[in-house]
Length: 231
Figure 1 (cartoon, one colour):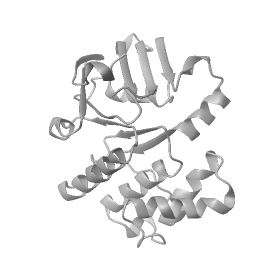
Figure 2: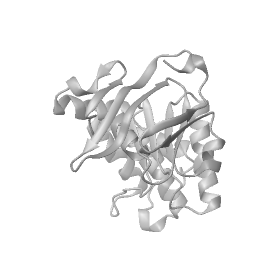
Figure 3: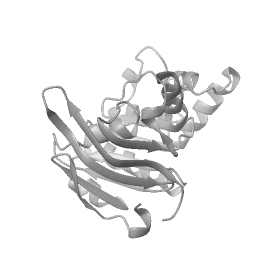
């Protein structure tokens, strides 16, 4: 794949107080249209890697570029805007607002990316239909199964058509059938052109992805990406 670089880490390291080094000189490039599984056991550094790619944290050294922009050079307000417009997040714990319907959970997220008020609910509806929840628009989270709640979370993440979708253990709280459904949705999104990085400790799940990056002790141990997909 030789498309535009969406996110690139250049010898990025992250050290926390007390001398804990979560990442050690990691270099990784993800190009537009790729689907990448970042796999490793708990404590390997994969969540820290996701936080850096998602601009939720900054590296202690090295560089992170998002669509060519050096994240470290952006002021906090600009960084928040970049995150809202360019990145979609799916987390293991859904993070839905309990008193809102599925439609409003998705529409509310569009407050931050500049979608005009009149369009938010229409865009939210389209996103929910895309993940197979067009019949659950008015249901609140407590009226949905775990798999359906995660589908709402995916719809919320893709509603603004982000340049990068980051999924952090998206199947971690789901049974096998629901997990398979979420993976199928992510695969369909990738087939339609979405750029996706999925964090997982599940080696079997990672093996089904087009590209696998293994991380251990804060370093990349292997990367099945083709030479053309690497920097």
